[in-house]
Image 1 (tube, rainbow, N blue to C red):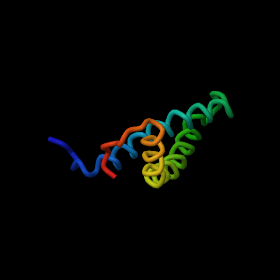
Image 2: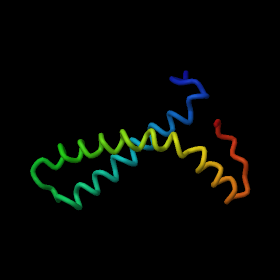
Image 3: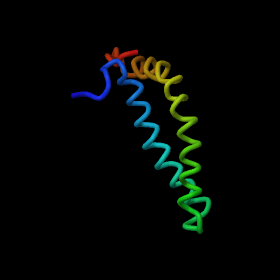
Image 4: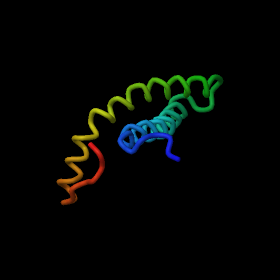
Length: 82
């Protein structure tokens, strides 16, 4: 049984996508900036939390625009719920 209704799919997708992407990118960025310095994990988790708070609403705002651009560039009409 699904945990969320189908109409929630774009939001669940955005939530999960931004969680993974910000986790990876903030980890890489923190490592490049600090190396494995003392407090690395704490700094990384702080950067991740902040990045996620920005990224999730940003994805929700830009998703319709990006979907239209993708449809135009690929000549398709996406069936993703809007």
